[in-house]
Length: 293
Image (cartoon, helix red, strand yellow):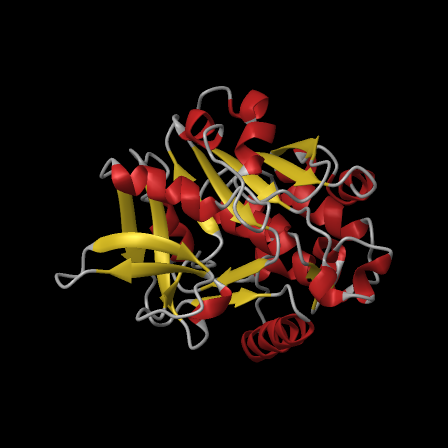
């Protein structure tokens, strides 16, 4: 399975912060925002990833992440000329996917929860499509899962003005090999975008959509607004300082997955020895606990 990180968009909800920089390069406490979705994919065992962003920002992502070899993964890059919707990502990624199954994650979504990585690995060999439901108090701001009388999924609706369901779709989606051909048949919505909900409904209509509810203890945060960015930073800060363990530390995940050696880990840390992040990396081989992805 291959992973896609969609890091495009105009970041208009964060203006003027995003006037000169892509929002996915902003920091969420002690790391760039894009580390969090990358870490989620890595925890699920994904090592081949495509970063999609705008032409003027793509070089910044390359400067930050390189080709991924330093953490045992492979990053590829593609340009999205303008934000035309999540569904367009699969057309852009056609060459990268090479007919394989895929998982797409939004670059401004933060996931955290015990055993989340193990849970996600259950979907890496998906037949059809697989998404998650997460109960929220403001479903009108998200794609929403509508259930029937017997709790069966009857439709997916994008940002409905009125809904009886409080189950939003977090920004991570698993698809089988048919996704590119399906995506090419999406027509633009009234918003002028190729909606991910239309793609999901295509799978639903052929009874090939699986929906799982994320456990109550799982945290899903959307950092695409000023409040969301602030709340996410506070959450990460509190958990990390309380536990002494970092969330979404991509070097740690690579090391614990066995993708890089202890020597490589220490080498990364020594490249910026005065950073508290580097100091943390140096302590990892001394810790007895193992990170529960």
